[in-house]
Image (cartoon, rainbow, N blue to C red; front, side, top):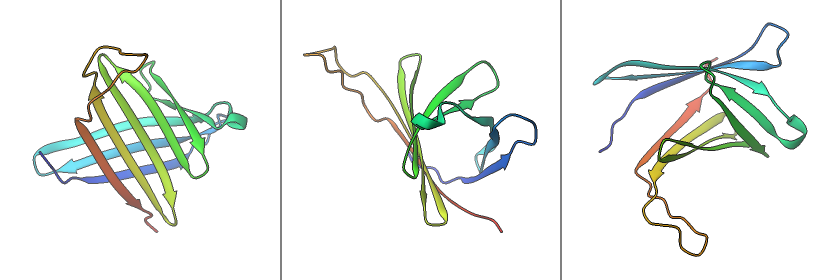
Length: 126
């Protein structure tokens, strides 16, 4: 099933003494009420490209920056999720995938399905 949504990302430098940014994503669609994901992104071990996305409810996701791309891999219950943000010119490309284990561990390898893909190209509002 495919659904088109309008997605807004607000990134704003925090004004307090913390090194970080407001990282707020809002999803709009004909079939849903607006969904708001209101996080903060903080500097972690920036020498090693690590940032922390704080969901505000005790959940903190580690993000790793390589060049112009930031990656996060985590699990929720039995679901594996990946997310990435990539700066390409003036656009920020955001992708999320998720899936579940589809077989037992064999020779130290586990396979996961890809059941969900979300892709957004953010453009800067002037």
